[in-house]
Length: 179
Image (cartoon, rainbow, N blue to C red; front, side):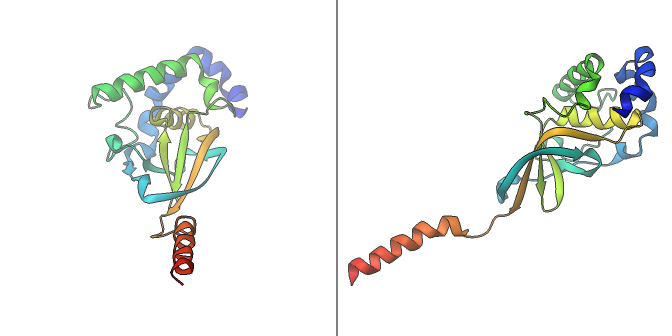
């Protein structure tokens, strides 16, 4: 809990959302745009709980955020669409009341990421991911979130062994019946 010991006094004087506002111009990643990927074209291999370095996030599985940048999604920007702005403002308010949520390794069952073709995409929790990265980097802490679900996908094969096995069994029965 490096953050708690180094920044506890600062947090008592400044809300976490204010910290983001003060330091947002210094955060170089804010101009990186988010890509969109359709996970339906990929096959889920496994899911586990783990830690995610938010610097590895390339985009999202939600097309509504395609082309947005990390910085443009902050509610301090007036160009943000109303529904996104409302969600981000709610998340910022939660950050002010519970900043340690982003540092605890538990309680994030509804926050998930997908690793597809070696790149990481936000599956659920876009607002929290945007806020968390800004908050943690503005605080001088590595932007790593613990206790999230991580889905690992591989390219969907034309016919996987699991899907073709019943077909092969049916064909063998047909051949036996005809003979």
